[in-house]
Length: 253
Ligand SMILES: Nc1ncnc2c1ncn2[C@@H]1O[C@H](COP(=O)(O)OP(=O)(O)OP(=O)(O)O)[C@@H](O)[C@H]1O
Ligand SMILES: [Mg+2]
Image (cartoon, rainbow, N blue to C red):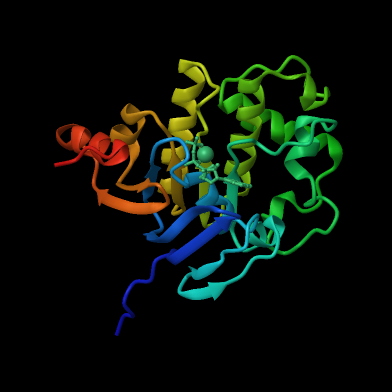
């Protein structure tokens, strides 16, 4: 007897208000292991707000979020992370005064929790530097100096550090909010490769992007938000790209 499959993440009828702004108006979606779900919508549609609700930055006003079928309420991003949700935020959220390696392991190096991949639990600072460098190297992004604080790095270099960090610690769900927005062509390609790899390793990857080429190339499913509501869902391919764009801008029919 096999149980019916349960989505790794369910967002159920979620509302979020910021004063008079009703940013999410009853959004529901499921994400499954081993798929790339594109979360699409125009500027201000509510994508980043939804990401922040899932990853413990905002509390939802109504509705609920379930992980593997169980309701969760994360009161901080670190609790969401501990539960297996790795997020690359649109505003990146790196610590400016720390080096790339310190950013990678910040909050994880002190406690040696059991959820940390076994090989990483007792790494020395040197080994952390090496591990971080090797992942960033896979992205083909050149950093000026590895021991410099990230405040001195470019937007693309910072983005690469944030994406690389998420890929190292991914265990269940990886949310990437416009991960290639600041990247050059070559670096973007590498990020797309990493996303495929994360999916093939069994993660659910939620990708927010305005790049429709990337959506068609990579996404197994796309969910479209408009003005805080889910207005459509489809399996993107070349033939329905126009339909998708119409959903995003609100001119379908
Ligand atoms: N912390 C906040 N306080 C007040 N209003 C907010 C806050 N965060 C988001 N909003 C508002 O909620 C709405 C949705 O914003 P959100 O950042 O989720 O959009 P988005 O879909 O990510 O857009 P973009 O593509 O530009 O990143 C917008 O009207 C925005 O102004
Ligand atoms: Mg956003």
